[in-house]
Length: 270
Length: 156
Image 1 (cartoon, rainbow over the protein chains, first blue to last red):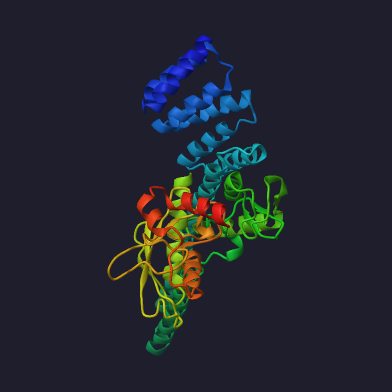
Image 2 (cartoon, one colour):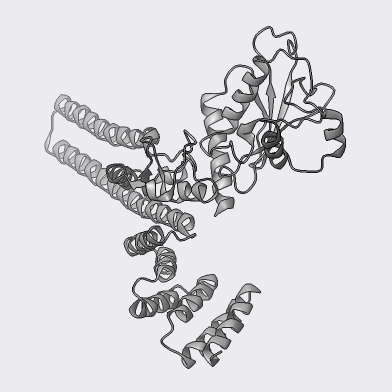
């Protein structure tokens, strides 16, 4: 065995024992001995993920992908690190790349990677939602402020007590209307939290990321139906023989689920 | 991964029950943890074998649930006896293909299993235990879902 592989094995032992700092050091030595082995970078990235060294995880995964562009683990770890530093768009992109590779190779990590795609979508939505709500409040306050200022200016210019009262009443009504319109929009947004059945996988009860359709016309999440087929090659509804090669992606449903999640990231935790 | 599928799925079944309730005669009496649930179950018609009795089903969800079936047995307590049925052993083990590895499907749920067992009781009119009950109850050390399998393969 080469020096580099020996160091890698040693690093794996430290990793399994929970000594991530030790593992990181050994993988680094292995990389010095052989800078061209992609697995060394993903192993070190995994140790660094555990240590929370996000930037160096990103660096390792990027190096790995330049050596081996179709590396599923590199995309997967990259997505985790990017999500931790709140780079949501890149995280989702890499989670989807990992998902595609898993689906193509029937990799056992498909379930975990599917969960990661959902988490990226949820967090990205949560971030956007927070920004949107903040902006809405800013707009509301600014508008209310303008109405009040408008009212005060008019009051300043008006002498007659009756006129002044009319101005005041009219302005207050406008202010109340504006507030209630914004308030209504906020509660409306909270109320509609229901996930439609068509978006839900009947095995995991999660919203689907990559629905595949069976002969019966029913769709399931690819990761969960694959998990089922590994043990029982049968259709969950009819128990008729069913194999992975019978499954077809349901592209229209995939698109619909994507669009739903785009607007309703909370649905991941439904 | 398997673990998280089980916890999430069981939690969602729980949410659904809280929201939409359960069919008549089925009641969740303990569903607080995501590993083990207890249901009280009654037969709704006047079947003299079960009339007026309440039975209790124990569900144990393994980490592979719902890819693998839950382990479902009748509890045996003074107030909650094991119902008399040619497919139910006197120690509470139920012989139902749905609960075996072969007959199970991951689109089933705790609720659908309760309904199947309820209808299995409703349609029964034999006041008897499975053949070899005494011997089985004395000797059995296996887990329910592994035995069921054998029983079916041997007799059906």
